[in-house]
Structures are given as structure tokens and as C-alpha cells.
Length: 156
Length: 75
Image 1 (tube, each protein chain N blue to C red):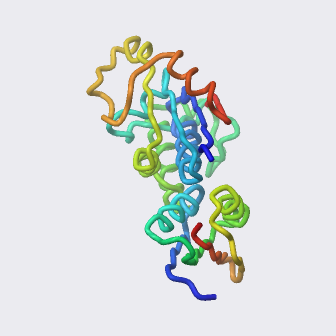
Image 2 (image 1 turned 90 degrees about the vertical axis):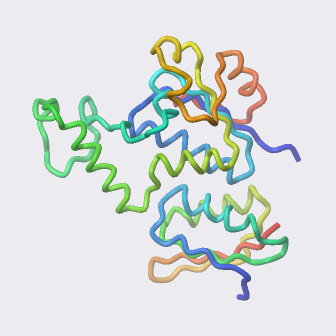
């Protein structure tokens, strides 16, 4: 039986939006699926060597649970984003949630294919050396080829 | 139930119990039984879905004191 396939597009570079592609990809790979993730726009930051800069923003996110109610004007203060990110990462660790780095490593180990969008790499003046080595570069046609053969295709 | 290997996923959240269960099964031979312990309540549905999709049979599952125990037979 040929394995099932899943094609993902990862377009966001915030901590909360970075998890779904890596969680789904690592799980699908564990189920024996063949998986490709196409990283474009801010999703490209998930292919950088260091994922430490991936942050969460409490701004414009009224659904984000806060330890204490916080007016928007306070959330705008310098350092709030870093503080919120640190608190979220600590909370995740205490709840047994894998780090992004760990999930990405699992994906690579289980042969999930990462494709960086060449157009946005050029747009943002990234260099190939900004990214981890286990990736390929391509465009929409590359994605469509695999997506066309896939059982599941999601835009995240 | 007899088992040849045990994997303790206590404290781990989705998707680690499934992803690491798969890893634990990798170096086992067909027919051997893996015992998995998890504390993630979501793992009850997840482990059944994993078994169904991978062909590794879920022989038995029990739960007590917020611990979930699964016996998987490697396909």
C-alpha cells in the first residue's frame, strides 16, 4: 500500500503558529505518511538555525490567556513581547510540550521534506546560509506537484 | 500481559507520546509487544488512531490514577 501524503504551507512565524505545522508533520510521519512543508513569507523564520527568536505576541490576540488581565496599552510596552514569549515557553515546558527545536528535529529525522519559498527568500534578502541545511528551495509549482498527489493539504 | 519493551511517556504532551511510541517500535521485531504509559488524556484517542493507521494492534488499554497504559503489538 502506498503511503498517504500530506502537503502543508507554513506562512506564519509566531510561536503559536509555528507549532501546528511541526506537530502535524511529525505525527503524520510517525503514522507512515510522506510529508512536505512549504515555508513561505514569515514561515521562513522557522527554517533559521536558531529558533530562539520565534516569539508570541499578546497584541491583537484577545483570546490569549493572561495570568492577570492586561490592558492593550500595557501590552504595547517595550519588552512585553519577549516577556510573554518567555512565560509561554516556560509554561509549555512545565506541561510537557515539546520545544519547536525538538519537533523540527523529529521532522528532519523522520524525513519530512522542507521546502523554502525562493521568492520570499529573495524578497527578504535571506541567504541560503541563514537556513538549516536539510531544505530545498522551490516555488509554487514545486508545491502543487506534491499537493496534487496528497491526501491532506493545509494552509497554516 | 507480557511485553518485551516499555516506554514511559508520562508528562509528555501531544504529539510526543505518539511520535516517541513510533520511535520505540522502530527497533522491535514483528509480534513483540510494547507497553506504553502515558498521562496525556488525549493519548486514549490518539493511540487508537495510531494503531489503526499503522497496523500495530492495540491489544489492551487500561487506566488508573490518571495513568493510561497501552499494549501495542508490533506489525
